[in-house]
Image (cartoon, rainbow, N blue to C red; front, side):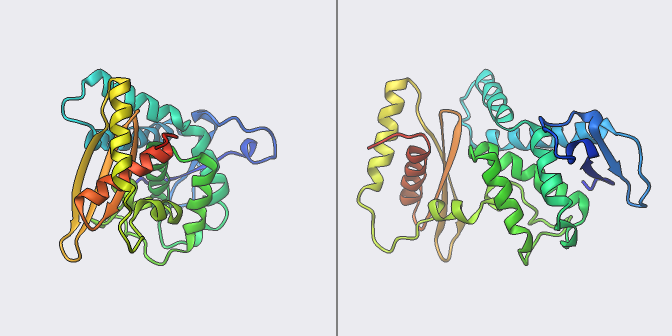
Length: 249
């Protein structure tokens, strides 16, 4: 759904003063015909709902089917709390949309959509906010970007994964890592001790060459692994979970 506006922070957010994150009344919007309007809380609200919907969709996709609703609500609350919407949106707008991204082939509403998708992805992967913003801005020059109504438009965190994430996410080793199964075993042992088990989901990305992606959810965090076999993808996801949660072998 294309939105007929671009959000931008007001002057009070860019004059060098302390910025604790603007409220909805501190946003203005610029319509496509160039006419400036008064502050529009509707667009601020709708962007926030996009983020909530994105987070809920990813949590539902990766959660175990037997997970109670109260647990899902708690997971969503934790994901939303990770990134204050107005604070991060203002930083993305101030540092990105106003400083060069306007030359991109993307329309302004698509840039905003990508910002929201990136926020959700970063929240799910517990990425540091400043790190994600830097990665987002660094990808400004990417040659291929999805058109507004393309089926390839980002729909989950995989589409906005950074180069650093991909190194840990994929299996780049030529030989078999004999320690990989230990990460899955260790994660299970920790789960047994805490009275909760890691929840895995695996999907096949391609048949030739064989390519599998595994996702593990544990302690309300989501980690991924990708390899040529289901088992190895699962172990890589377990390794990333152990590393991300400071669980040692």
